[in-house]
Length: 398
Image (tube, rainbow, N blue to C red; front, side):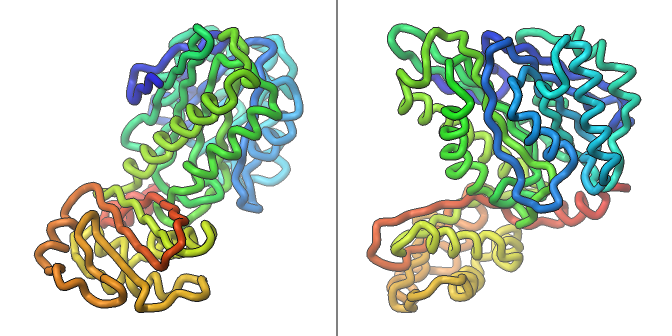
């Protein structure tokens, strides 16, 4: 596979994109984006599991039943907690853009990200949708990657291609979301497009698998947003069908979502460390993940990581309170990167505070926890918890 991260996104045939400043953010930055899909494209999506999901999530879920030809994204306003009026405004935004595109409103999926509890204004759509549509171009996806950002510090985008039967299949993806991140989706948006030919059902199957091993394995602060969503769209322009290359396409989608997910963690609000919590040895994946999330969500573990403090007792305490039956102390093994701290429930003879502190000072840290003899291994990715995280979120609406 040919894999690219950063600004060199592959152009996907059948996809045009644009991003403009419409005044939603009020600081003249890009805040209104559009991804237009050629007629005959298919789109699948997963959404937040927060029961108080935002108006655009409800509208998008309903519109997903149609032949989707446009993804409409605004940043700076979440349109969440806005009741019936929020639903009306979300649908109205689809209606305005659909008219410019000469398609039905139900063929537009709306997405919003930003401050919760403020009604999405309609004037920016009324005043600027013609310019948004006129700005559509083949290489506009990078601009959309900038236009969907909120407190993010960097754009998150990557592309991947693979050859099958003499033809190239291309995928490009973008994402946003540095905080309010945890599994079951998070305050993140991600949009992936490909030139493969696939039905919505086929894409949904692939996306569910991909999201489970990527976006549902990251956590920054343990909060789940009202607005998060991830879509994958196929334009059927490569000459290759999903039915011909199921394994290759699934692997490619897994790789794209995993890399986008890890980019989100690396850009976590105030984050200074990228941390993998890897748990093995328990009978089920569910038990391994329960332990991993308990460690990853621990404020004491996360603040120790920020301080580069090898306070391994905090890790041990988090493992001990995980809601998992059958963990015994004599089977616990814990390492920081390659430095073993606990061996069979005892402090390793090779461990020293100096060695632990050296590993904790690194920007990339793997906390390895083995709890038994089963071969099951699961990982989640997280960050430390810094002064800046508190500052960013305390001042978010200031």
